[in-house]
Amino acid sequence: MKIGVTCYPTVGGSGTVATELGLEIARRGHEVHFICYALPYRLGRVPPGVTFHEVTVPTYPLFQYPPYALALASQMAEAVRTHGIELLHVHYAIPHAISAYLAREILGGGPKLVVTLHGTDITVVGADPSFLPIVRLGIERADAVTAVSQSLADETHERLGISKEIEVIPNFVDPDRCDRDFAAAHRRRLSPDGAPLLVHASNFRPVKRILDVLEIFRQVHKCVPCHLAMVGDGPDRPLAERFARDAGIAHRVEFLGNVSPIEGVVGAGDVFLLPSSEESFGLAALEAMACGVPVVASNAGGLPELVAHGEGGFVFPVGDTGAMAGCVIALLSDPRELARQKKLARSRAVENFSVAKVVDRYEDLYRRLLDR
Image (cartoon, rainbow, N blue to C red; front, side):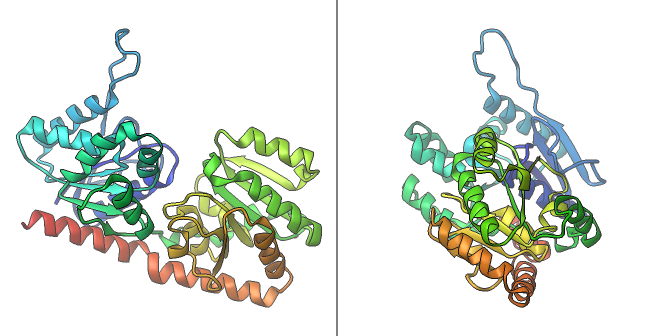
């Protein structure tokens, strides 16, 4: 098969999943073409079987905003025409779905189109109805639509008012990426006194409720001295750093920025915190679980589909920092139970969300579409 993949190449769940999926499909002997405005950050060295097509966006003075969607459609059409791409798989509906639709219109037909919804591409529509008609068109014209959780699929039907079937294919993780020696080295640096280590990773946007992370840590630290590693960056980082200083916990909190590979830091932790107000899936939580780190999270969106309460993780109502802190304190105070939850977290990730099982489903979807 010849597959074209488009995603946002920056740090984030949708780009990570799209890149890892494309690489695994290439490892299975298929030809994969990434069509993006920059090299995806998880791609690194471009391996055999993978081609990168850079989307060059014109910046004429006439354009107040560069026409990325149109430039992408043109590059998609050119890549299909030149390389015989049979299927375009776009991640994140805005604007990739409509760009792929325009590319097919340019070609007068051509490749099958798969759209994978990741979360904010749908929740943004709810906040800004001006996007609704064009996102609905891109989704309706796709040959197949997938979502990373049932929660997101249901929300898409409700917000967009579409009847099109949405297949739920969850995000995935490669358990072999967890390097115990690498994690141990991070652990020694982040907790030089050997105290427990809590970890959070996100894009530090308001929906991640970064101040809740710090408040949970503050409450836990009062009972069980520990450290907190904050992985990522974003608009709420200055607010979080100020909160840590004002709360007198800054000396126990380390802001690491964007780290690659993330598994090194996440795997060093004892508990992973994710108290988001919105979360279509929670890829960072899955990466933690795969490294044997139990998750304490909110019950927002698709998180309860990933985190089974009491089986390698725990979920609580959004904003209930007291309950989340109490759970963490109980875990850190009971080494035997913490060890049990670590094993359960790893098992759940491997058994339900391993790269082999989930990519099988995508590969089967591609075959079904191309065999029609």
